[in-house]
Length: 275
Image 1 (cartoon, rainbow, N blue to C red):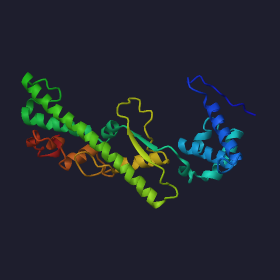
Image 2 (image 1 turned 90 degrees about the vertical axis):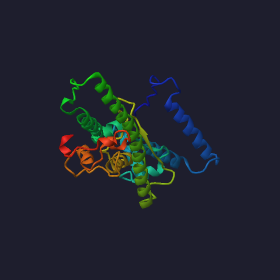
Image 3 (image 1 turned 45 degrees about the horizontal axis):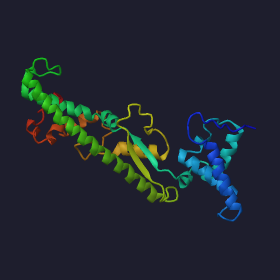
Image 4 (image 1 turned 135 degrees about the vertical axis):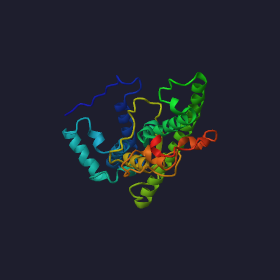
């Protein structure tokens, strides 16, 4: 028999095991005294199913030692409650489904930052002709200040685009969730909610939602990533185009500077390969 470990070294608060024991003991005493509905076995079973649901899967409950006899017993109990494939798991969940996204990473992966650079390059060529280069080593001080002012305007546009993308991404995830609930209300009950959190300021990205998983958060993330319109357009990324998303945007005439009143007069290159 394995002795429960009550290690409090990771926290200064009350021991989780003791808190859980106290709460469950109190609840089952109330049940046995007819002060609470249900029965003890049902209470414990639903409690375990709720923990599994909040963790995201039945396997998460026994992930620390999946081959143990305790894990086998817990697995059997959970399968009898939430289904062999966790098909009823979310009906027990009490925490929101959280999708964690880094919109800077997403927009970079989609090539959006290349489009702002393309606008800078096009305007630089328009203003300074053959003297324009990425190094800017042939520009005068006044010309450097001029191009830096243009870049600042594009930076402000990028910030606006990022905010708009976040709103659209969250809306796409929420809309898809509502569609799933309408298709299968038994699996996605009314009390279940979805939130999208943008972790742009977290350089570690440790909590980002994995787009390759089969859980609900991963599936909603992948749907939003594939269907959220790119900034400056109402078109979702063309994943089958065989070219970079930045090239697709620019080829369609969606140059960032065209959305800035003071820069729109610079137009676009007469040939798309000039950017």
